[in-house]
Image: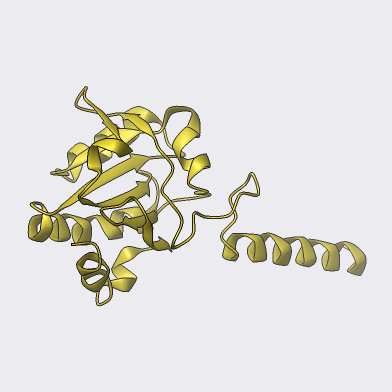
Length: 170
């Protein structure tokens, strides 16, 4: 490889990294930001039910976009389950499967014995509306439907902060 193509490849990699770190997804949409109203959605749940944003009005909501193949999704799940056990009477938790095979995502949910609602974002409609480019991405939404926290990455890395984020939406 000559020096020109080496520099070009490094520049392309740096630009891609900068785009990822800036919170943009592959469509160039920015992550939903703190203070914005959460977009409405309808999600078919794995148990056959349906979830939509309106049904969570008046209650805090944590939406996490995950995938079975993602190591950070796997690392995040124990903390999400613990938070659910602590706050299940006051906060709703929802896992949305993205960038995955639906059957693999369903196996992931069963394997982890996820005690809260989960559904697969078929066609990536919801993840596009929320600006999610890759898993895991977590939104903490207050009772009025306003985003209070938006976090891309392993929620385990925010183990000390996450309980405080949840208190903000009680």
